Image 1: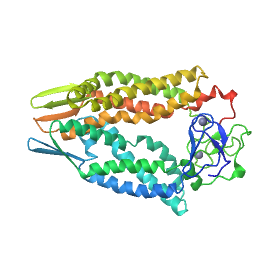
Image 2: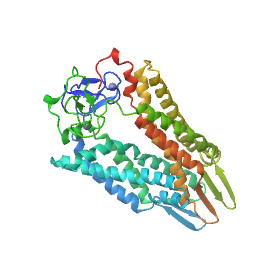
Image 3: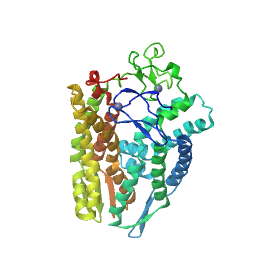
Image 4: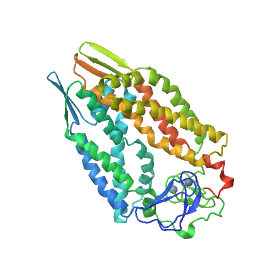
Length: 414
Ligand SMILES: [Zn+2]
Ligand SMILES: [Zn+2]
């Protein structure tokens, strides 16, 4: 991508000319401050090499146990895919699917997608399936939660060392390696670059800001002229559906936020974890679990779980409610700060999964017949629903709606 190209902002919709971006530099939106374009020299080549490393680490992570527990002469061990299996055995298929999809399936699919998109781009010959696969990349990325799973292993490790001998397995290092490799791969990629290499845009066909409202493709970032070329309602480059704004954004976000609020109460009032050791057993809600950790495990764990399980979902619901109401009231108050708040909801959501992963890991390892057990409580199902509903709600919300009210005071928007 070269300088002086017309580009639309994903977050506020403003059309602007791209300045010359130095190597490893970032161009930010002149209105809302979002990153418009990151220039990553050799980004595709680096991301491809990292993807290959990620696949090797993924295989190691799934081939060996990451923790081994020894208690009263009995040994149990856990593999990456084993965490979901234990929850399934306890009759909670929805939580098992959520754990498996986010900790095993999504990272695997992301690595395969990256390989299938980047390898042809590296050689220069782009087969027809590549645009379809590239469209899936930004949709899949939010569901890859390897870093959250890695944090959950540390939390479970501290809890378990208080009750038994725990050995670290080889796959633990592979999971942490995979976490860093995935994050480095994504930070070396700019979607604009990928799409430019799939299909460069001829400047002659580029719409100008004075045209009647070009439509910004939310998938590949291309500006489509609203006349002729987009008659079939699809982007002329990536063939994804083209909408000036995400369709029914407000209605869908409202419905999902209300669903999350309905599930939030039982998620906090019903037990999330039921455990028994040596003849006694206890069931803990999220808050009871936090207090137990504060008294018997470590205040660091208590803070992690309190932030991830109580503060993050509540903050996310409140921010989304505030954004929905402010858009409904066509507020012109500090749209830049409201756009920032929206970005916060996108980033923090996945960290709520920590508690669910911890319960899953404990359920596999503390499974010693009559001597001790851990299983997920009904609260976990509602809590998982809160995480999923708030994540999809944040994806459904279109931050450009924040700017629509203030639009007349500024330039053209797409
Ligand atoms: Zn912007
Ligand atoms: Zn497109």
